[in-house]
Structure formats: structure tokens, C-alpha cells
Length: 629
Ligand code: COA
Ligand code: AMP
Image 1 (spheres, protein in one colour):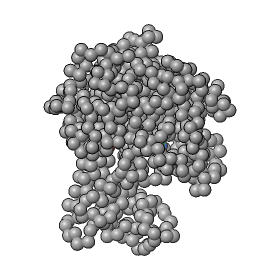
Image 2 (tube, rainbow, N blue to C red; image 1 turned 90 degrees about the vertical axis):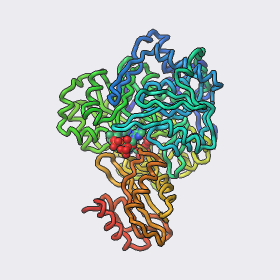
Image 3 (cartoon, helix red, strand yellow; image 1 turned 45 degrees about the horizontal axis):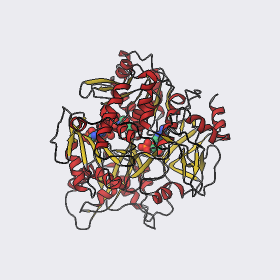
């Protein structure tokens, strides 16, 4: 069946279509049906089935005789080390860690935070939780202690599994002080912290801590614990409009079924082949496509600890693809832009044989046409943009190349996947025709594996996603669809920005800046950045009477965001201004500021309080190299 027939087959009978997809998963108790309508637009999938994620990602492959196949390739140019873990080895490592966690009383439903860099043990920790039905929440290493504390308070973990350090080019990131700082700040205290000591930066083991290896000594390995299909597999926090991150809940059964479907149909790989997503386990791409999907599908996954450039050069990606015979490669457009900037002529690429590679997949942010074209020419394989979110956990719109490679239209992530009825709505919630811009919404129910709710925040879930357009999920993206059903993603409709493929909340940064004693009012916007897509820019209005040098205050603000949110916020640009442009009702005109900064044409907002402020803002932006016509 081609794409159109498959999509129509889903649309005609979603229940049958998903039950058929569910047959590829090993259930302890098969679900009696796919969709469970809980009323009030709350849906669950495969709720009465029983299943274990770790069994499906590890044990069943060993049982099927594939124990000697490599499950994880660890390639770490930043440390100069590499290793391979077979499915059998992974099974014993995961069963051992799960046994140790169980011996501390961790059981199905208990939360465990994982705070680790890109090492295979991060996947072992995730799978060990899954083995017990414990709910993990992985926190990205580039967040500051304060962000970790917020997550500790929200999901109240019984245990934290962390590494002693992570490695960034030129510096070692000591995780332990961040971890201890976060626990000191938090209201909740975990019972135990399991610490993986790394040679590059070992740490002191405190009273609450236990060494990763010592923790597992003499314990009984644990078996897989079946959990209901609607059991939360994990919580992953992502940026929303306010400073409080949203705890996206991933349900177990739907996650298994949907991710498994994507591996062949979207990413074109057969079990046994090598699939590589160059992201980080702290992001959704890392959850779905470094850890779970490739393993569930029986592929070999690559855990890459390095950067696209500088570890050691712009040929790193191509070296990994050749060396490990990667068939499908997935990364963020920023990473390709970084390589392009460093090696525009592709001299590094010429050193490697990439004949095994079938396609490059890009997601996480808008893929600009220049980058796509450059990558296509360089690699000689199709480049497929695809669009999705932490909330969905896998592709909403993409090119289902394994089913049928559709023509690429550069600038579009292609078409809606089966399971997703994507519509473009006007402000009143009415569908608009082809070529008309509107809010991108998905008709409910969302497909299996997508978020059923937010952790501890059902009301926020409804308010954030379901209230704007009754009967639809609001994606937070705006865009349009063409006559052929190709989707175009143009912008966010909220205050979320995307910096180097990392989703960040301008509201969270504003909260930090507003906490500076000299800042009376502020606004953070995302301005265009050639490498990272967007970069945050802070506009600061000072408290009356503050007479200190502006660059001192700006430097303090930059430091504050780094300390309170983390280096990943990449907050480096700030500017003191006399006033902020506002509407008469007091709303800050953020999008107008962005247009001025990026030299885009804009209409004078009819409700602006004082148009003269815009000239002041333009002058101020020009002092830092923005708004240059
Ligand atoms: N732990 C600690 N710090 C981290 C970190 C981590 N896991 N990841 C990033 N940081 C730090 C970086 O060291 C940098 O710190 P600095 O301000 O001291 O230089 C800061 O956070 C910003 O990082 P980043 O935005 O990644 O920028 P960069 O200049 O270091 O690298 C790229 C630029 C393009 C090479 C890099 O962003 C990249 O590889 N992007 C790919 C994007 C990606 O994989 N996204 C995931 C979604 S698919
Ligand atoms: P995250 O939840 O971090 O994956 O971020 C999701 C958001 O990133 C989406 O809502 C979009 O705004 C943006 N995004 C992700 N993929 C794409 C894409 N292929 N094209 C345009 N924007 C994208």
C-alpha cells in the first residue's frame, strides 16, 4: 500500500488500523480494543492491555535469537572512547540495575530522575526503570540546578540516577554540585542517588549517594513487570509559555505501537540495521530515537557523545556514518548548518564512503531551504524534513519514505502521518482552505503514544491544548497546507522559541530577568540567528534612579539566566531601553520587536500606545548589530 491508501485505511477505521499495528508488539495481555474515550476530550489507547516496554526493547530480541546483535554503539569523540553492547549484554545490564532499584523499594509507578550525559548507561537507566514500570524523567545536562529542582519538586522521584560529569568542548560539566544544589533547593528529597563515576571527572560520594557499580553488587536481576497499556512510561518536561515546564506524560502501550510503526515506514530501516539520531537523551528525539524506537524495532542505535563540529572536526558525522554503516541519520538543521559553516565545500565529507546511507532526516526546528539543498548535494541522498513535538513523541507530518517516498517540496515537512488529522484553523476555529495561514490543530483524538495529559496538571493540559479549539489539539504552531496536503510550518503562536533545535520559554527567561534588583520590566524575544535559527534577546527597562553602567547590568542578567536556567538557554544578548513598545491595554508588542530586529516588513499595530517607541527600539537594536537594513 502507498501512503494515500494507508492514510485512507487509517481514516476509514482507526480502531482496526491501530489494532493491526499493535500486533507487532509483545503483550502480556492483549488489549481488547484500541481507543478508550474517557469523556471530556480525554482519550487513552490500549488501556486494558498489559505490556512491558523493556521486554519489547530488549528481552524479546534475545529470546528471538538475536542476543549477539549489537544494540548500542557508543561513539565518543569527545573522550576518545567507543564500545558496543549486544542485546544479551544490554539485557543483563538492565536486569541488574533494575534489580538494584527494586531492592531499594522502587516499583511500578515510582518516579526516577535520570541526569546523565550521552553514555550508554543513560539508556540502561531508562530501560531499567521501564523494566520495573517505574516512571523516569530524564533531565538534560545543559540545565542549571534550579531547573533540576523544579523537576524534582514536580515529579517527586524516589531515586535519582546521575553521572559525575558531562563533557562539553573545552570544559567538564560537573553534575554532582548541580545535583546536590538542586536537592538542597527542592522541597522533595530523593531516598537515593546512584552515581556513575566517569574517569573524566569523578566526584565525592556523599551519604545519600551510592556508586553505580556498588549499588548493583550482589543483587538479584529483576524480571520485566507488565503494566497496563495506559501506565505512564515516562515524564519529559518541556518549555511552555510560563517559567514552569510542562511534564509531558508518555503512555506505555501507545508509545510502543506507534514508535515501532515509524521505524520502517518513516525511517526505512529493517531490524538489524543501524539507525542514528544525533541528539541528546534529554530531549524527546533522544527518548524516541536514540533509546526506544530503534531498540523496540530491533535496530542498532548509536549513542554519540560529541558535537557536529570541533570533536574533532566537521567530518565527525560522516566518519560515524561510514564506520558504523548507518542507514538512516536524523539530526537537527542547526547541526547541519554548523557543519556547512565550518566546511562549506564538503572537503571532510569527501573523505568518507557514505554509500550505505539512505536518507537524512531533519526535525526539531524549521529546516531552511539552503540547508536542505546543501545537504542533498553533499550527501547525494534525500533529505526529509519532518515535524513533531515533545507532546506527540513522533512524526505528525513527514515523508513516509519506507512506505512510499513522496516528492520532496523544500520548505514543507510533507504530509500528515496516519493517526493525525491535521487541520489549519482560523481564529474562530473554522478550517481554512489550501494556502491560507492559520493555527495548526489536530482533530481529537490524538493517536497512540501522544500525551494523554500533563503530570499533576490535568487542568493545565486542557487549558494549554484543548480549550482554544474545542474538539482539537492546539499544536502551538501556525502554518498552512497546500492543495496536495503538504504542510508548511511558519511560526509558533506562543512565546516559545527554538534555539539550536532546543525549545525554550521566553517567559521563563523573563521571570529570571525580572528578578534582577535593577530591572523594573523586561521582554525576551527570539531574533533570527544564522546558526541556531533563533537566539534570545532581552530588552531591559531599569528601575527609576538606577544609575549603574548598563553593560554591568547586562552582564549580570546574562549570568543570571545561565545560572538559573542553564547554558543551553544561550542567553547572550540583552539591551537596556527606556521603554517597551506596548498596546494601549499594556500588552508588550514582542512580534513587532522581532520584525524590527530581523529587518522584516511589519504593519504598525493599530493598538500601539506610542508609535515613537519603535524608532527608539530600532536605534537601540542597531547598537548591537540588529535591525540593520
Ligand atoms: N550539558 C552542559 N552544557 C551544555 C550541554 C549539555 N548537555 N549542551 C549544550 N550545553 C552548553 C554548551 O556548551 C553551550 O555553552 P557555552 O555558552 O558555554 O558555549 C551552551 O549550552 C549552548 O549550547 P548550544 O546551543 O548547543 O550551542 P553550541 O554553540 O555549544 O553548539 C551546535 C552549536 C550547533 C554545534 C549545537 O547546538 C548542536 O549540536 N546542535 C544540534 C541540536 C540538537 O541536537 N538538538 C536536539 C533536538 S533534535
Ligand atoms: P520540541 O517539543 O522541542 O520537539 O519542539 C517542537 C517545536 O519545534 C514544534 O512545535 C515546532 O515549533 C518546532 N519544530 C519541530 N520540528 C519542526 C520542523 N520540522 N519544522 C518547523 N518547526 C519544527
